[in-house]
Amino acid sequence: MFTFFLRLWFHFVAYVTVYSLLWGAVLAVVITAITYFLKGAIALDADVQKVLLELAIFYFPFTWGVSFLVSMFMATRTLFYRKANGYMYELYNCDRSEKILDVTLDDALVVWRKMLFGIIWLVTLEVLLGMILSFMLSPKSPLFWFNIYYLYVFIMIAVFVLIAVMPFRCRRVKLIEC
Image (cartoon, rainbow, N blue to C red; front, side, top):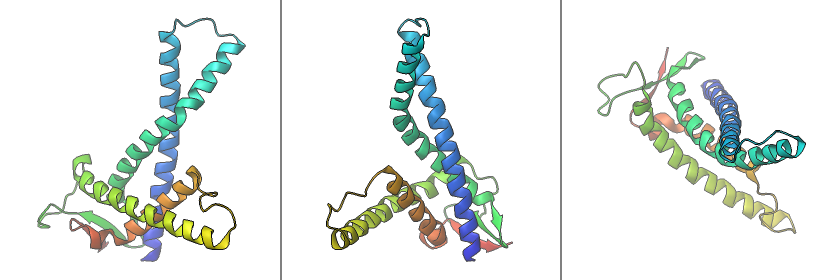
């Protein structure tokens, strides 16, 4: 069963990483192009290209953050279509009487909302644990190591834990053998 959770997690991480980076870059380029055209679309010489590149790099963290949340939501929906090692997640209606065959975004919203709050709590716990360990083991400030890359790793670790406990945490999700 551990390999089922691991494969599901790898699929989730790959989906979120690829789509959030891709859509973050696309949105940053689109916002940069809109800004370029609204400012008059002057001739593209070397200086203007350099400024447009810097503007796209400036917009990327914002657009990546939005696309990260959206891609996590979309990846939550795909969890119910993946089979691995003879197991699969099924989504049921509120009273667990009927299995939902075609999981829509509206159905996945309940599960994603529970996952999102679980991620917030688990990442907070991981950061506090990291601060305590770095305070005990390092003479530097407890936050010298904290950056966006560690936060991304903490989020993905929290997602693994939540994928493993999802059938116990969410009444509508059931782990079945197939």
